[in-house]
Image 1: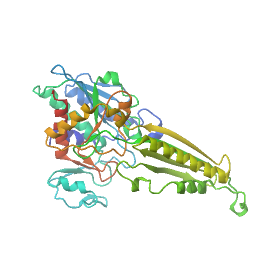
Image 2: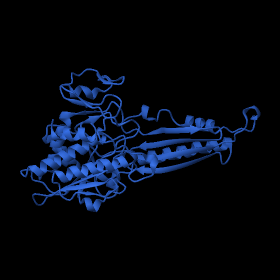
Image 3: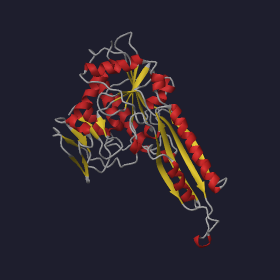
Image 4: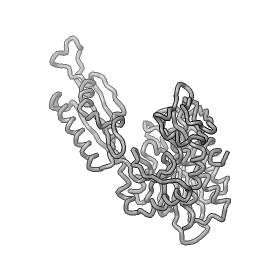
Length: 402
């Protein structure tokens, strides 16, 4: 196997799920294990300027071997989601995929009729799990690709390049990866996150994002004596949820269409709560979604009385397109690199967010690149060996001197 695949298979065996509920930085100690492993590998390959800040951020730099070139940042996150298990990891390689239905294991199958991108991988080698865990390609594929690039640059002086500034971040999956990234220390003029999906992606449009929590306070009375007096908080929550448009959910939208996504609910007759994430590529439309939640809240208040419910909304991140559009040369550099490698680039809207969105608003322009993997955040996650190897070639062309 190639270096990038060897590294990938090593890193997916290091559990590093983030967990928003802990309130810690990083949110889990396992991420520090992953950070220390990366720090060790970077030092052993001879990468200079290696630094682990003790909070899960790992930096390194391949020094320029020619003049007059920009310092280019490459960023990937070392955490994985915690909605599915990430261990014990039992990955396997499906050699020479035949284009048929994949029996992953544990009752999970992947049908090209449902996942049409599988057909583009016919004849290639795919990495899957045994169906009991995620693979962790989001984003350990990106981590491995950047590490393999660093090794290549250090060992092939014929590749002329400026400074290549590397950072691996914790807690991206809970929206905190960009919080403490030290942009001045990184030293990049601009950067790319390597955190996308199918090969060829040059992504710069992402959702504007917010989260909302609605709480309900009822009056709990014995049901036998409740007429005219009980106010059931759980039923208030159900009623509130029914007011939101059913055609604006993740299951009914695509492309640039936004949504309300109910991610958590709990309740008793006395207390209940709903948690939503709100998404839209158009900031004005996201604001309308916030206003609609407030309108629904007032309807519940009118029916059940003041103090029966409350709403809190928190902004998460914004669409980087508003910033990146003024720097088309950064996108064109990535597109040219794909084209030099024989890959047709595309720029689909990201129905999510990346560290790059927040970093772009912090002053470091940072679009997102593909990794050669699909079906992130689920047990059907797959990475393609040849596409990951090609991404190392693409990254080489991105940093290569013009």
